[in-house]
Length: 79
Image (cartoon, rainbow, N blue to C red; front, side, top):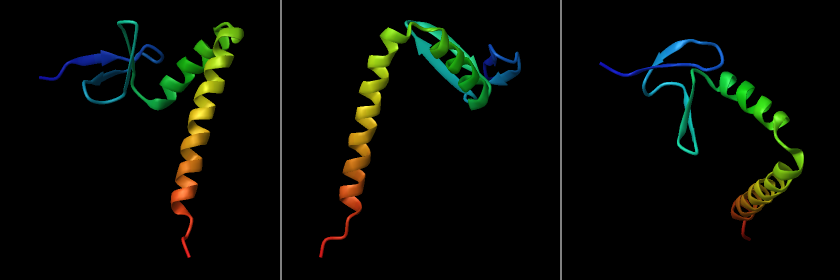
């Protein structure tokens, strides 16, 4: 029998292997859907100190910009 988890946003019960699980500093957070995870994380971001997370946002944005650039370079046709 699989382990059951409860979504911390909507309270829905769902089996292990479904939903979204986040582990932050040893704490497990279970969400039954990506919509519930998004709702929770959005609220966390708005509640966090903007000065601290703005640098993290810049770093992650830069990382994805670099990945996109590499992907574009790879997709270019070589004549």
